[in-house]
Amino acid sequence: MVIQSNMSSKTIIEIWGITLEVFKKYNIPISSNALSTMVDQETLPELLRELNRTIRSPKETLED
Image (tube, rainbow, N blue to C red; front, side, top):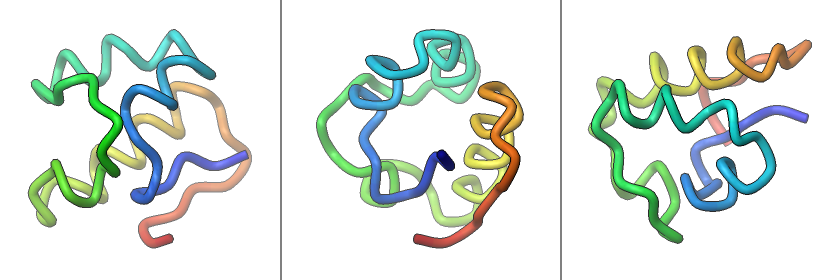
């Protein structure tokens, strides 16, 4: 499974608790809102890459 911009930080952390440190690093609040609505569009691709590396996803995506 791949973490995507339409997912919320709350859901991501519930599934992959290890991602909490990434959200702290980027100062992203734990929320039910989609990442795409909470994260600057310039930062979003970098955040998604780091989250997917953290969970060791075999695929990474920049878009939904």
